[in-house]
Amino acid sequence: MSEYIKIRWGWLRGMYIYTIVSSGFLGVGIIVMPEVIKRKFPWPVEEPTAFGIIGSIYVAFGLLSILGLRSPLKFVPVLLMQLCYKIVWFVGVLVPLLVTAHFPSYAISMVIIFATYIVGDVIAIPFSYVFAKEQKRVMSAFDPC
Image 1 (cartoon, rainbow, N blue to C red):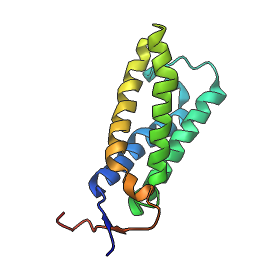
Image 2 (cartoon, helix red, strand yellow; image 1 turned 60 degrees about the vertical axis):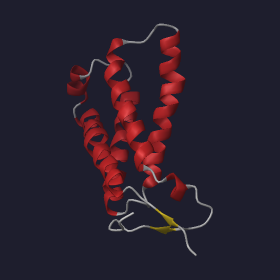
Image 3 (cartoon, rainbow, N blue to C red; image 1 turned 135 degrees about the vertical axis):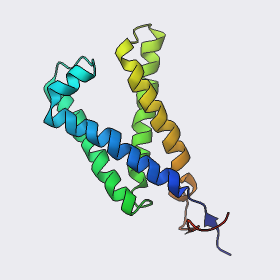
Image 4 (cartoon, rainbow, N blue to C red; image 1 turned 90 degrees about the vertical axis):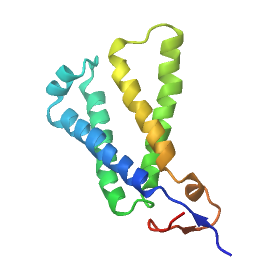
């Protein structure tokens, strides 16, 4: 008897759309009009090359998320990568800043946005599918369970 894995299709597509809108557009803004983004977000950006890398990565997440709308399960690694780097940032950057009382006020919005991604990705990513030892059947979006 084959086992089924239930996928939260709405959450999965929602996270791809969220990534397209927020990361994709922010990345394009960083690359196309960096001075406008620097004025809108009070980030201390002294190195234009590093700022450009951040923009490029965000654009890549946005573009891959467009593909994720078409093939949600094939592009789950995009959401998994996004989840991993944001958790690493929380543990490796945010916690030390909080412990040493050097947390900058301009980072509050970043913490909130990253937290929404972490929660959304944890809900959306079908971990039982991603980490299954063998391919299992996926429930259709129309299955009642």
